[in-house]
Length: 151
Image 1: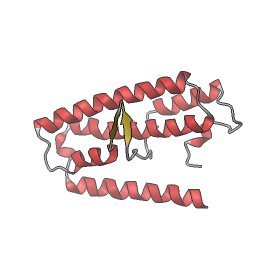
Image 2: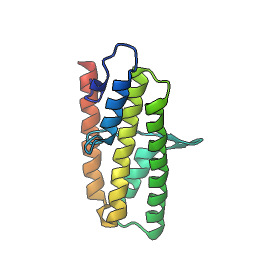
Image 3: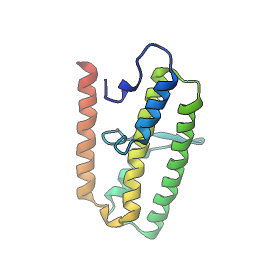
Image 4: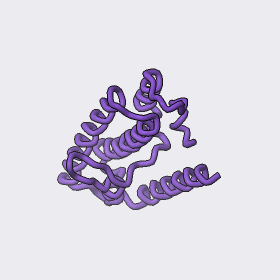
C-alpha cells in the first residue's frame, strides 16, 4: 500500500467515514507531501500534460510576465479541477478503489498547485538546478512505489 490507501477498510463499500477520511487527507496541511504529480490530467475536454507543463515552468531561468500570467491561469484551472473532484469525493457514486485513486490524483494536483503558487510568489524559484532536483526526487518516489507494488 502506498500510505494513502489506509483511509478505507477495503470491504467493497465506500462508507461515509471513509469519505470523511479521504477529504480530511486532501485538506491536511501535509496531504500532498510525497504525492506524485499526474503525468496527464483532463481539464474539461482537454488533456493537459501536467507534469511536463509544471516542470517546463520550473526549468526556465526566468519567467516572463506572460509566463507568470499562464502560471496564474493554470493555477486557477487546477483549483477548479480540485473543487470538482472534491465534490465528487463528497457526494459521487464511487467505489473504494475509485475514491482512493481520485484522492491520489487530487493530492498530485495539489502538489502541482504548490509548485505553481511558489513560482507566482517568487519567479526566481525557477531554474535548471531546481528542476534537476525535482526530477530526481520524483524519480525516486516512483521507484519506491514500484518496489512496494512488486514486493
